[in-house]
Image 1 (spheres, rainbow, N blue to C red):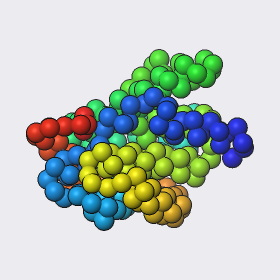
Image 2 (image 1 turned 135 degrees about the vertical axis):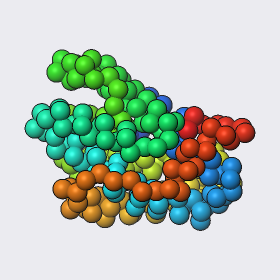
Image 3 (image 1 turned 120 degrees about the vertical axis):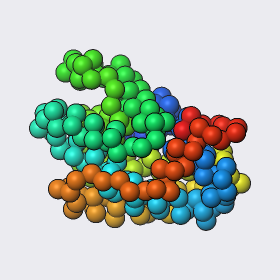
Length: 225
């Protein structure tokens, strides 16, 4: 990764970049309301579950496949991956939030990068899931697959910890300790995903699925999912 690529990656993964991810907890709010996630230890378990049951077999693998396809200009393949990702999300709110973040990423990135080819992609395909959008954008920035996976993994982990800080009784220092613990696992997780590149996308995480579907019934909500 060149210094310029590093800086642009930091820009795209910073909370200042307006993709709206801060408005979604991906079921963590429901879990906190139900008493399933209530302290640092239980949030650590939630983070581990996300990495092992969501990022490895589904989101991260989808991003890897999209990066490979984008490098070859295989847009039909990417559209197929996007459709499969949508089908793998049982909760309507999660389908909506993922596509909303993807749309905002596309729109903002296209506005700051003067590239007519990328703009044509956005104009003909304005809605897609977040892993797909990040895969396309990070590939457009010239990132290799591993670097793109690390960057997107960081975005997702930061989002979970940020939501946790607003939902349960933990402090900033505990939050950073949890994030550090998760970040330390990320390179190994990325290696596993790269080795599994030829495997199909899959999703079996009933704990998250149920909490994501239950979010609409939470009495007082801070998040949209």
